[in-house]
Image 1: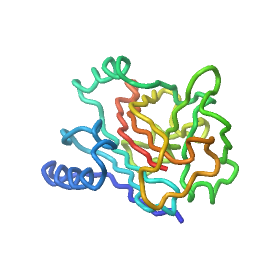
Image 2: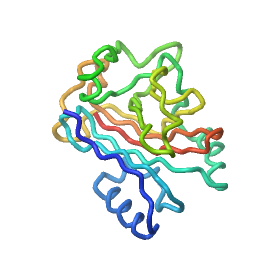
Image 3: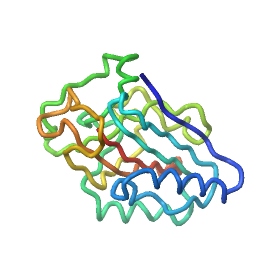
Length: 201
């Protein structure tokens, strides 16, 4: 069953911030500590999955990069666990149960996170977000991540273990990582788009 909320938010920024802060408060702080403390410009796009029957919990915020946000890339390069390009074939992705019901050929059974000479921490598979002008140009069914190949994926933190009640062990993840979480940021300076995200499986 695919249950999620996806929305593009306009309107008064004070109201959007009220809703955004309320949403972040639903999650443990360690999962959302890298998200911006407030929304500074609109529109934004939220993508939320809170139903454990989807085999994961996911929260994403997509926004346009402002002039100050462009400096985020330099900061991320110095502090992250890992960095991948969106079309890297070794990427390990967590996919929703709904996506796999519709596209069972997308199941990949991962033997290890050590792939292609490096460690590949799990990321969400970024399902199509083509419904909104802000996100329609960043989705691609041709890459292993679901993002266009100009997007860079930064892993800020990722650990194995049980972090959300009701999530069963993931059948296609490697031993030791059947449950866990990852969080990070994706960006494209070419398109001026940032994606803040976390996923728990």
